[in-house]
Amino acid sequence: MKKNLIFYFSTSGNSLYTAKEIAKHLKDAEIISIVDAFYKKEFKYEAETIGFVYPIYASGLPPMVSEFISKLQLNKDSYIFAAECTGGGKGITFSMINKLLYPKNLSLSNGEKFLLNSNYVRMGRNPKVGEDAKKVIDSNKFKIENFTLSILNRESKDLKEKHTRINLLLYKLWKDGFKNKDKNFNTNEFCTACGICAKICPNKNIEIIDEGPKWKGNCCDCMGCVNNCPHKCINIGNKTKKKNRYKNPYILTSELLRK
Image 1 (spheres, rainbow, N blue to C red):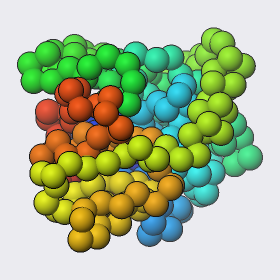
Image 2: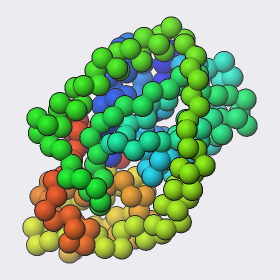
Image 3: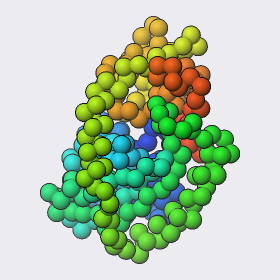
Image 4: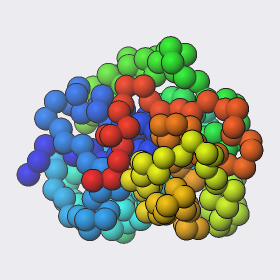
């Protein structure tokens, strides 16, 4: 049996960075891409400690993370933790995970929320980049160390979240209202059809044709394609043209691509 397994979902690098930092302090730990495991249909694992690291989408879990956890087969004595990476919003992801684990007779023992830079260029503030982005990320180092220590000590926390009903409604409206999240995605004349956007998309929603990327109507709203385009060619209508693109500066784009 493995000692520590950490599953992560990341298209802009924040969750991968956090997973790597936690793994570094746990030492004997393996990190696994949820996207890669999902497509390989690898759902059965045994480990003393299981962790989930992910961003929040409209207060909740990325849909693929929910589906992955629902399919997981884990040993009954695992110590399970979750790390939520947020750009500022409050999530209800611990409640959602516990609901998914309940049929397996499992539950979260520990969890923490980490405030990192927002990558959501569709709306909100202009994402921080460069040294400003690094300052926000670096401010989490002590918190990550303390969280990892609590995992090593097998601490059990009260993970009850506030405003659950309101956030669940927000999450439902987001899921129902963004059926065509990629409707206004477009590229400019600088697109080289390099294919990075297609390789980074968790939903395999992008096809590369002669003119460049074509979106197929199954977007998960992760902003991975927009933020990782090396030439800043991808926009959502006109509203992202003057906005920065965000990728965690400590993570390479190549680390975020589907295997």
